[in-house]
Image (cartoon, rainbow, N blue to C red; front, side, top):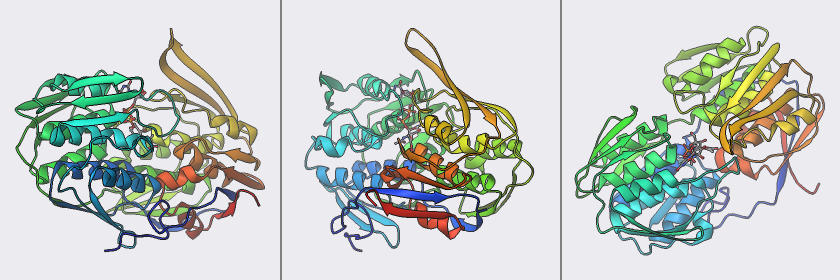
Length: 448
Ligand code: EPU
């Protein structure tokens, strides 16, 4: 196994990639087959789970994206030996001993996912000090539910500004009620409780497919967990977890992005390696909008079908419509007949990218709902269809970046998307996959 990867940004031996733009030319129907990579939001948490055992954990189908490399570097800073084989998309991790409990802030802040490391660190080492994590700027991203859960399990928290020191002799099982089914909150508490004494019950837990997969991986490591996929998860703590070999589930968000790219360009694309139940909220809305969809084994065929029709969407925790596909759905709604309403109910700032779509010709009117600073929803009314025209636009986060590329696929002329490093964080070989389906997308240095 090799640990250097010249083509993987951020890995030792790789060259730093200069800032790039994507140039997209529209009106080419996408056709063919694309293989879906492993899920970012599952792989990152599985990597964090390697801290729970001194044995080796081997993960296959790991997407070779920048966030995975950030997590690998965070684990290394804590004492892990991490070997990455980019060709086989395999990552092997062994954490015989935790060497330090104060990861460098720049590594901890690189992604939101690093917050889940707090659970395994408290469970195995009884200590972690960290600064609040980073990730996309898509609205408030507090971790009060994670922290309250740790306190319920007996951890002591000391705060100084945004620096937090959490300590515990040994975590104790507890009943933890979450005000909202936080995705990373559930993961952090689930991992923490595997090595706690007694029984932990997480009430109002998140049921996202990545959490069910992570929980099943923990069970194969020796954890005793029931209720995965339901709002109440129960964990009986054990003394020790063992190593495991796992294959990361397909990325439903990447699959959804390519499904939308097929539908918006009037194309026909087969997605190889998807899990039908994970795609449900998206496929229902695509069917309603007029696309045709077939599932067979682990493949999904998407065909543009009839004229696109307006549909309403509200983002909610799974099995609600995923907030991570809201932005990718928006260009399609600009091409649909009628008025669509999109309620973003998870992140208050996740409609900011629509300003760029409006500059491209979309008719999108955004309003914010809430009282006394309390966020309820940000909503977009989309009037369609409107022709889009290529423009210079700027990606604000991972999902906004692909939304702008999708808009470019139906726009007249050239769309230049700046700050595409966001795409590297979450999508493996995005440009190669798109061009493989016939899209006209080119990478260029930002200065040319
Ligand atoms: N929230 C709180 N307090 C908390 C935690 C969350 O108020 O302690 C609120 C947040 O402010 C937000 C909502 O709850 O309004 C949802 O937050 P959640 O904790 O569920 O999201 P997350 O764990 O920060 C993960 C994914 C996101 C994905 C969401 C929803 C990772 C690393 N990130 O974020 O993925 O959008 O769940 O499914 O798993 C992405 O991949 O581009 C991405 C942003």
